[in-house]
Image (tube, rainbow over all chains, first blue to last red; front, side):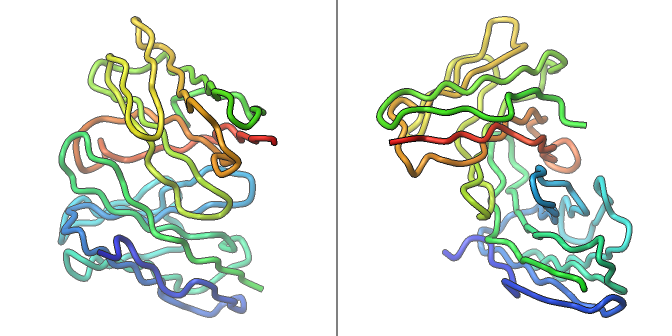
Length: 113
Length: 113
């Protein structure tokens, strides 16, 4: 099992450009998450999907959209990138069953110039 | 805001036990204490969790006080590879928003030779 995979690993954008970050999990988990991490800070939740077909805002959703494409895949879209969105983005999944932990992907390092 | 308070940094000698404290005085009865760590810029990794009893696994031990207002993560024989940021998180044990993780800044543990 690959666990949680993310693409791309690195990306440089110019202000105003758009892009989609991809995330996939092969653990048959119900819930998926997108976080961002700025230097020296903990992770902050952008959006989450408690189950296939549902999405909800987290702590910092402005400037982002998400799509739960199917049970495996959860994408994050930046429609018009801004320098403030320079960050490392982590995707995670969780079975949704009590006591289980979240599994995290390796991250996407995004720089917006 | 994060529901936990941790020291920003700690040092530990290689081979010695590392004891990482966490205060969570507002924890509610159905919330668990979870510990994750983040090595360098990788995705966070689950370590251990508990409700009210002490817990031990192959990575660490978790000691929770009787009033559940604080806990200590113990790495019994720290190695250089345990150098990481350690996050103490309280969360519900269900899916959806109750399963969301709220990260603080964590404790930066430096294991020294």
